[in-house]
Amino acid sequence: MLVIAHRGASAIAPENTLMAIEKAIDMGVDGIEIDVHGVDGEVIVIHDRWLHRTTNGKGRISDLSFAELRKLDAGQGQQIPTLWEVMSLVSGRCSLNIELKGISDVIPILRLVDSAVAELGFSPNQFLLSSFNHHLLFEIKQIRPDLQVGALTASCPLDYAAFAVALHAYSVHIELNFVNPAFVADAKEKGLQVYVYTVDELPDMEMLASWGVDGIFTNVPDRALNFRDNPRL
Ligand code: G3P
Ligand code: MG
Image (tube, rainbow, N blue to C red):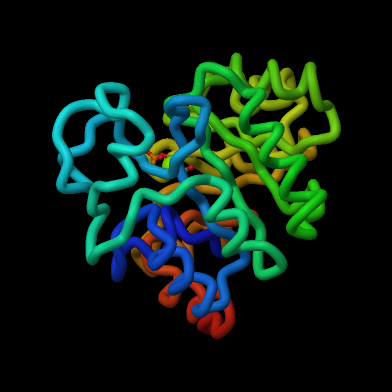
């Protein structure tokens, strides 16, 4: 079962910061998950549309310029990172799941992925582009069928993982409250990887491993790695 750090090692460092990502990589995670928004043609790494929860700023991301956003404190003196900074930090060390949140145009993301492959030594399949906005994933696959996309859902649809097949997705990412053995079996039968978010408690990790889930997003990667690498007999 892959261990993917949710917003970095976000239980011990400010989420979606270079510090949280560095700490997760140090723990030995298989991948990092981050959330991204577009602003002024740049791509920044932050979860919410509003600034107050994770920074010392106020208002919406869209109320501030890129330069103003970069002056904010995202916790423990960390800046809101750019996607390129995260790519540079992660390169050659683990995979990177870029979750598209406040993104209306996929082109800047695709340009950054291409630059990371050309300049940082990433291989394209070390990236996974995911979103709850399936229209964005559809668009990415139209432009770049070679890139891996992950279809997010916070529901257990009537036809299970069929939506992810329609998107030619590599993986389906389902919320912990709604995943069940029937969903996992259906997705796997359809050739999809099944990742579950957000999994922080050991009994949930045990349950999902027993169902054959392929990966989990967790705020506590050290706990998940310890479970994964030392399973109870
Ligand atoms: O990508 C998995 C998970 O991060 C999706 O939900 O709200 O934590 O971004 P959220
Ligand atoms: Mg996310």
